[in-house]
Every structure is written in C-alpha cells, then in structure tokens.
Length: 427
Image (cartoon, rainbow, N blue to C red; front, side, top):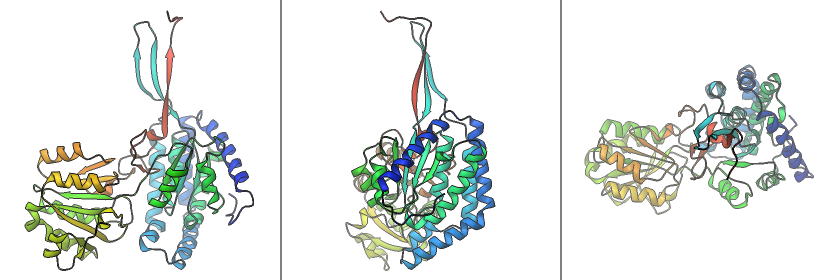
C-alpha cells in the first residue's frame, strides 16, 4: 500500500490508474473459484487477528487526530476500534467467507413450449466504488463482501479513518495474494484530496459500475447529485419507534431503551418515539425514566412537556433530525393512523419499529409503512447486515431499485440469462 498523499498533482491520472487496475481485479474475480474466494477471506481474517496490535496502533493515530479536531462523541464512537470490535470484524469476515457463493447461482429456470431452457443466473456487478466516512469496519465489510460476490472494490474512506483503513486493507491483500488473486481486487484510494471523490463519481472512464455512499446526509447528497453511475443510496437513519395501545409495558421500555441507547451513533438508533394516547398514563413515564437514567435528553410535544418535567420542547426541526447522540424526540399520537402518517412524512425510509401485541396493528404497520426495514417487538439496532446473517454489509440501501435494506453478497450481484436450445429457429 502506498502512503497517504495529502495532495496529488494529478488526481485524475491517479484515479484513472486505480480504475484500470480495478478492471483487472474484476476480470479475475468474476471467474475465481468459490474456494479461492473463501481462502482469501479466511486468510484475511487470520491476518487481521495476527496484526491486531498494528491495527489498534493505526486507529490510535486516527483517534488522536480526531480528538484534536474536536470531533463529536458520536463520530469518535464510530471511529474507535478496540479488541472487541476487532473480534467483531474478524467474525464478520469469517462469516462472509463461509456464505454460499452467489456467483453462478441459478435464481430461476423454466422451459418454453419450443424446447428452449432458460435460466436466470447471478453475476457480479463488476467494480464497486465505496465512499465512506469514519467507520473502519466498513473497510473490512466492503472488501470482504465484494470479494465474495466476485466484485473488485475501490475504497475511499474519510481522512479521519485513513490509517485504520489502510491497516485493514493490508490484511485483505494478504488474503488475496495467498489465494492467487490479484491485489487489484481491493484498492484503497491513497489520497485524502476530495477531488478523488469527484473522479469516482464520474465513473473513472467507465471503470466503476456502481457507487455506494456510506456516511452523513452531506456526503450522500453530493453522491446523488454528482454521480454519473448508478448509486445504492444509504440515507440517514431517521428511525422511529411506535408504542401501540396494545404494547406490553416491559417490552416497550426495554426495546425503546436498547433502540436508542445501545449505540446512539449508528444508523439504526431510534431518533423519534411515538406513543399512543391510550397508554400515555401507563407507558410514557416508565419509558422516559429509563431513557433519562441512561443520560438521554428528551424533546417532546405539548403533552410530553406537561407530563415530563425534564423534557425540552420539540421543534419542527427535531422531527427531521438524525441526532446520532443521546437525544430523542417524543410525540403522543391519537391513533396508529396518526403514527403511520407521521412516519411517512418524516422518515428517511431506513428502519421503523412497532411495539404491539395486536396482530392487526402489526400487519397494518407493516403494510402501510414504506421503509426498507420494519421491526415488530424488537430493537431497531438489529437493522444490520451481520444481524441479518449476511456477515456484514456495505450499507443499508433506502432506495427502491435493485438493492434495499442491508447490502450483502446477493445485493452485490446482477443476473444474466442463459438460453439452451437444440437448433430451434424463430418463425
């Protein structure tokens, strides 16, 4: 790996070379055997474990620089690596290694009256460009998922996580080398110059087949505005939890607390709590007390303000805000219809949860809410590719085309048709 370049005289030339190299990697990966890809990933997981100290030292450099910049606590939490999180990265890479190889899988097949046999078969997308910010684990997830799905990947991480990402990529390259695959399959952009992002969004002379942004609203907005290649949009996680009139109190308290406070800086963290008016007297205070005891700030509507002395008034902006912090906006709704209307108006279509024992209410919520992930009686923080059994994720796509929800190996494939005949001619 080349050292980080703070500036580059010719960013277009640098990025064009990366694009050409990625095509070399993609051409090799699309015909790589399942065992080659499995070996590459298991070796990479072993290298991450063996070089744990080096990765932690690199992360310490990133953390120190971020702290000196006065970066927020939520950002620092996303950036931080420790032994437990490295264990999680290793487990994710190993899980991905053991997933069924999607490439070549027959999705469906059928016979036509004229004797033609038609198959729809999974194929790699080609070259994936991943633009992300502070999470070093995205480096491992994106690299491993891309390798498993037969795609080359160009990683452009944020400057704040560069040293951590570089240390992890070196482990992925060890795996590729041992498996007899070109190291061009995984490339980390060796410059922090933002002009490199612009080059990726222009497609690197046709080298990039899809862009995946993983970061805040500003990054995603830029990608969607400037990209000349398809985008798997990962919008902010403006996540809602709705407490139905039929909600079990214990579940309502424990699930809401976990959804908000387990990790406040991740995209699956709850940001708005909606409570049915019929359970305000029984459920609101216990839920709020549990949140406040964990250090959560409450911003409420008029009803919440009248019942919760520590609450601050919620503004219109609060209903639109992904806090990524120990803050939650709380609103009392008259009905499940009002809850659904609020969610549909303000949601980023990432993840929403309903706490309810009424099966009819759950079905109504599931049928009428148009978000990528819907959860019943469980924490929204399960909105994660690893928790879905995907091993990891490149992101959670909130759009409606091709991929939606956690983007794992299957979502990183397209398909082609294979038509087998025996001399048939079309009349």
